[in-house]
Length: 320
Image 1 (spheres, rainbow, N blue to C red):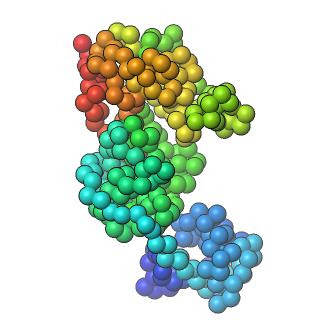
Image 2: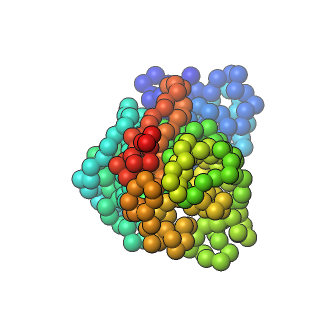
């Protein structure tokens, strides 16, 4: 059991100790510590290799077998300093508790700093509102456990603690997070629903794009169903089972039904921003992260959040 007065999970810059129970005898150090701390096994192994873990006051290898009764000490290093500047950018919070939050990201907001976008990003906004996010999950992407493209709107989950970041990251990696999008695509689909299974990687003809014509594709699966047929377009409900870059946009375009307004994957007709029978010319790809559902990393309870569709999608959601 843990020493009295110790936090339930490790905190950056503080020593965290626990006593190995007798029933853990024979278990590997890295496996036991990962299960006890809430950190991923890979993170624990890195901490052990860097000398941040002591067993009875001495360093041990990740593969060391425990005897039971030893005292383990883990010290999470403080986060590295960041050059990111907090900025007072408005955020629409859909759900929040001490461990995490889900926000409604507007189209046009870049998730994190990158080349050409060193400021004015979601991360800059988060650091202004939540200064303690600094260093959680990384210096450049504090708090983020997944991302949305700049012009995709909707639900985005942010971890407020290191333990929450670890737990949520495991769920995303294990594909236990349920994500549902709304997408407006060109034309009418032959089927009322289906499942697209096509590996995605750098497009062999254009390295600036992702595609299914690729030399080194990674598994990618997207399920979809038709919600409503529209004049010249179709409203879809889309559920990605994997999380590849531009996955939904690439998969739908591969069917010959690119997302309305997607200038990158829709070809010349989308770069020209044509009108549809339901709305004006789209200023961005009409893709919205509508719902997200996951298990709370600390309480184990189910969390489900829905982001109201933005104004540019409303004409396509109307019954008539």
